[in-house]
Image (cartoon, rainbow, N blue to C red; front, side, top):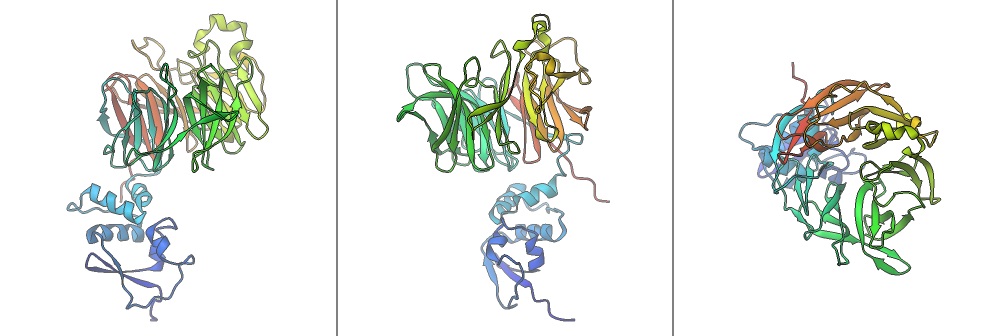
Length: 446
């Protein structure tokens, strides 16, 4: 038998480990091992060469076994937080997450834990982070939690109300706040999620003058653009666009007549269409407005409003409470306060209320509403549609969006917001200031 040419030797904290380039290649290009070796992962190693790493050898053994077998076994003597720290160092956190939880499936989610909020009063928004952590907005504070759900230093925006918060990437959180009466502050800021440091304060400039503004709903694109609905001090409305890397404003879309861009409840960037979905919904406005903006040509390529139907006066239950674009289906899904789902064809702008195809398959909870109901929210993930209603979240699947399961948690009252990130679903309850974490368990090893 010949000598294997790709053997690699490590000295980790005084213990010797031997493996192969093939095993290390399982770590991927973004890992520490990807940075150590050439692009082909095909090298002839001198077996006498030893790569010294001054880290914990017990954790290295666990992580090396994970690269070999794609299975995670953690001995009782190794704390999870220690393994988490070491996985971060080697760039293997995604591998640990994948091995610990199964692929995200809304129909198999189980409640793993609930966390009591750290601020008095109710939370207003929750956002799942790409690494499995999350952030929660309370008034003028944003509390950030890492993958182990330990709280990082909170982000304080100096007594300004937080209107929206979002993850620009795994290391940065963007916060939009309101102007304070009589002051020229407010706007949008990019913060370090680990230290709370303010990295950029995004400004709106017009005719070489910096304008103060209130930042509302947020969205992000894959090429590091940040979108925010904006309201100026003199009631100017529009959508601002900034470059996340430089912090500079790169575009602005001013509100056309008789529209409501600057007080949008929801923004969503559509990568395939290179457009921005803007939704201004009831009850913020008496009428609902949904549109697609093309920034390349500064025009509105698709729009819908409920202004067209005289039936509105007697069918208030049809009011749209949330909207989400589903590019693969060329449609926009909307939901009303009874969790009826409605669908609009993106290829046809009817401009009338009857253009929504409503479905009542999900209406299983009609009856007594809670004393302080929370309006339903929508999310789309891995081909599954999620809708919150009162104290549960419904999961819809298939081409006809059939209701397949419900996630319910009685503690904490109605769900005011939920989010999916890092293969976890986070649900924020309104009454008890608590949020739940739902995960997909790994299948048993037979």
